Image 1 (cartoon, rainbow, N blue to C red):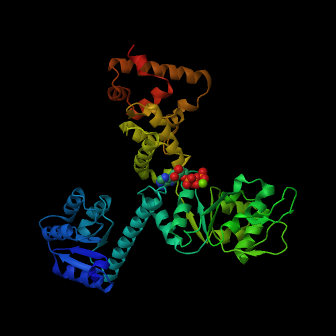
Image 2: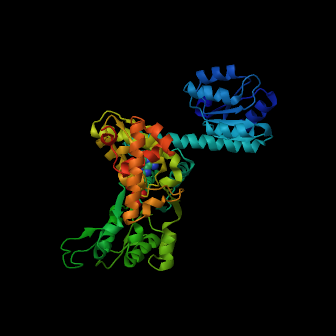
Amino acid sequence: MSEAATRPTVLVLDDEKNIREAIAIALEQEGLHVLTAHDVASAGRVLRERIIDLLILDIRLGEIDGLTFFRKLRSDGFEVPAIFISGHATLTEAAQAVKIGGFDFVEKPFTAEKIVIAARRCLEHSMLRERLRLIAARDGSREIVGDSIAIKRVIADALRVAATSANVLITGESGTGKELIANTIHTHSDRREIPFVKVNCSAIPENLVESELFGHVRGAFTGASTPKRGLFEVAHRGVLFLDEIGDLPLGAQAKILRALQHGEIQKVGAEKSTAVDVRVISATNKDLQRCVREGTFREDLYYRLSVVPIRVPSLRERRDDIPLLIEFTIDRLCAKHNLKKKKLDEDLLSELKRYPWPGNVRELENVLERALIMSGDTITVMDLPEELITAESEDKPTDVAHGAPGTLKQLRDEAERDAILTTLRKHGGNISQSALDLGVRRPYLHRRMAVLGITKRDYFS
Ligand SMILES: Nc1ncnc2c1ncn2[C@@H]1O[C@H](COP(=O)(O)OP(=O)(O)OP(=O)(O)O)[C@@H](O)[C@H]1O
Ligand SMILES: [Mg+2]
């Protein structure tokens, strides 16, 4: 293999010779292999003939602009990551470049250092993606789906910390994917060959926590007729996942602290301690710092566990990931239930993007699974649970009619039902036309119809 083949290859496309050369020199010094092109035709040739790891291109290219060229590359199926170079006049276009999938842009005039940093970041990012793809392929483990900056940051942090032996504390609301992240860290650590030992701290009865985690000797307590290895011992040289760590009683917290501080555990009933080498990943949906303030969680243990804290964002904070998650989940569920892939009604997506998802990705999966099983050829808003359709998005003021109790609410509902039915009949059941007439959005009309129990039978009678 030639030396160039083992180094990442960068293609620099610029019509100005000085800039091409300045970038080439800076990147060659960094150990990258650099090719240059002065116009899109020659750049196109290079891209067809070789594997290019990074494309750096000017937004102004003379006869054709860099954005158009990049769009064309994408539509021709070239996935090459790109960094755009922009002058002051082209800053808005630069922002657009990032929107259409460019990795970054560097403003002119730039220093060699700036371009080197941008290139390094971009290459590192592609490498992480590649590694992620590898895990999914290797052990069939669930892929972390998401394209939002928020989730990408979490993935990058997880992969970075995986290579070290630091303890990691993963926090986030229920169903955000904390366990998925923990799995990813384990699979990427040098302890991946040793089984990943998981324990749900909230599921163990308080009086058994110590014996579960540290084991016991025979006769340690009534019922301990045989000795038992604790989970710390089982996880020796490997990784122990302490899930729902916020639910651990204070007594057990003290013992865990000791195990982490001194690398030794004491079995229940044992006189001597046993040395263990365990990396701990813990997770909780509680606010542990608050628990520390309230005295239910030891501060010293908190610091031991959270050497590297990772906060997994809620689904509300990364709504951009919803379409991708839906696609992956539907594919997976169709395969699981042996179903033909179903289409999604356009209003459905806007409803799913609107809903605040208190149960995060897990709730999304459950809703989709139910809708998939219950729907016809197309999944529509009508296949969603009523709570979801009636739930208000966080950013919208609440509908006054919703909270109104008793007869006033009933009167309003009846009047609304009549108005909707009359309009639907007038338009022969056409929802778009009726929504227009009633002055509401289509999804809202769908939602109200579901809430008020209006079905086709009502307006086609
Ligand atoms: N980014 C993601 N991509 C794909 N699937 C995800 C993602 N995040 C979560 N999931 C899926 O959502 C479900 C819940 O994830 P997980 O069990 O990891 O959440 P959790 O944060 O540990 O929840 P809890 O706090 O309730 O224990 C799983 O089926 C998981 O595979
Ligand atoms: Mg969990």
